[in-house]
Length: 530
Ligand code: MSP
Image (cartoon, rainbow, N blue to C red; front, side, top):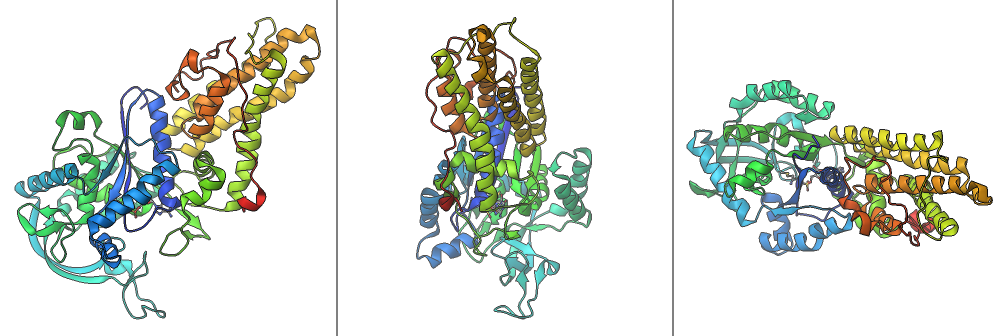
């Protein structure tokens, strides 16, 4: 994958009915880590995120707040969704809003094409609808509570709120016609939907048979107008899924579209079905390539339940970053949770990992090495010598090379946690190396000078490699470390370093001057962190 080729990765576009919580930030960070990794591996990378602004849910929220939906969306985008990207340090290349003109124009073209080619017909819809999900529901997806506020009513099993009964003239997309082609796709390209648990669920769902999809609504008008019948607006999911293509030139810039498309889609497993069933069927109907991959990650759980604002378990990302910083946020969620599985968030676990891994493990290593270079070599990185080299230095080099190749392989599988674990083995290796080589003891005897040079060069070169390997995950700390290593003038910035080449030993030029490094991950007052 990482061979200079196109790597176009997307997050879901988020509903602007509410402000972001750490579940949304989690998807953003994962996509960002993958994007940064690929960018630094030399791939033609593009990271897209954005907001989903049409539909009944947004309309109702805006109305409840006394605003026009567009005005409401503008406010939330500016006050909450764009700032989220700063809060967790996202390097997105674009931000699409479904109210952007470029999007609306291209959605109209897409729809007209499907209509002209016979994939869309008019019909009557009668069924249940959950506004929270913005989805039509089958009876077996609903609960009938025996007590409480909604006793005796049919409620959505996800939102625990009553569904509505819709009876409308609608336009339908002939999705049922794509059942076999979808099954063939899952069969011939097992990597198309991942992880396996999500893939199995999707295959089973499609095997049961597909109905046609109602893709328009006429009872409200907050949406993109159906081009041949402006009394209807396009169903919000049909509109939203198209963002992945409209943002990269579909219908407006063929060359750009061909360069970027297809994409890798990162989504929460709750919306994998839209992405792995409806979306490829839409693309097939339009004669476009299906995505490279739909990866459905797990949920962040708080107290054993999916964290959500509506269940009052929502935690704002800034609650974490204000105390721990954005790097710690990014590291923690990428390291502590197997990407693809659910993971429980706890303040205790976050604090413990911050202290043990970031502050004591990596932060201390960097501070110690820089401090010893200052103390024993006046801050100038010494040259290693062959005569003073031993097996121990070879072991350090080997550990960097092994970690780099394991991390590349893990990233190719979207196993971000495995990539981080592999890189962390270098942190442990270097800490062990320093403990064993005891540079402070070598410094006492002039006869050990060459050995001391070699040991500290090896430690500093190890730090150089770690800064590069970790920069997709903890960009702020690694750029501070890079600055302290004094290599910017000789090598360029840390994000300009190729991850393909990271293990080539000896890139740190002897003779550069290191500078003071404030603690990368300072101690956090226990009272604040709990
Ligand atoms: N607007 C649709 C997506 C359209 S994509 C064409 C939507 N938006 S959403 O605002 O509800 O965000 C859903 C996404 O937020 C999930 O798919 C997931 O990526 C993320 N998460 C929301 N809650 C989450 C958790 N508790 N845990 C992990 N991710 C969560 O659905």
